[in-house]
Image (cartoon, rainbow, N blue to C red; front, side, top):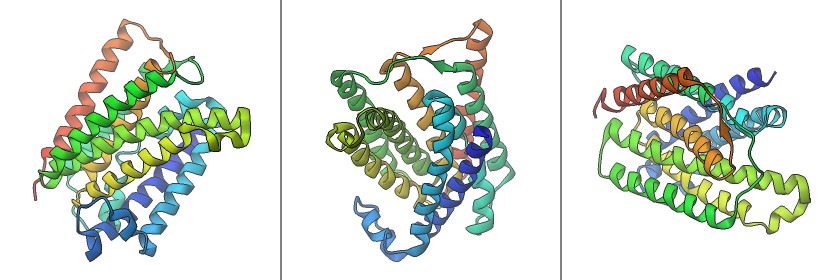
Length: 277
């Protein structure tokens, strides 16, 4: 059941992404690449439908999370990068090349294999505030650099850089969500007084803004593929560093994980540099 719900979540998420992209591409007030883009997009019913699809996708993921735990949840629900290619061609009337499809499949397969071989488990419920500050500063700093670089580029490369930045931030949001959920389960309404909740809201808002900027390029494959990879990758790294999760695998597993990583980045390169505007 967890796998079925995760696959359904991925399909609904893909639909939500395409609906948002249609508005970002066509609405005149969404053309300006500024931090206030979300406040302008909220007036569009189609964009709101895309956000609603995200909500449905999150609801579908909630059951797998409760059933198999945070690490397994992150692995099962995130690989989705090939789905938007098919949705994009049907709903956005954009041309999807065979190269795009093959690259997206390679990215998805590489991500699934990497997360399967990494297989983090165990760990603690939360981390000291000092570790959160260091981890947050590193991820936010890298994301900020990617955004600055992306805003000076155009086309698929811009989409890839911004997608990577949003993926890193949403990986941080996933880790913060784990902390907030633990507090909610243990202390109920006290979560409203805890910093995890407000940090994930603020970072999530920034991540969603960057996502819309990546969709502005009109090229979904590199935008979604990079976000789909670096979100769970960041989640795995944070799980290992903040929550003391352990990776159990053999020498064969290490080699396989490296090959999976190389395949992922090769697929991203093909998507990012395969076409220009």
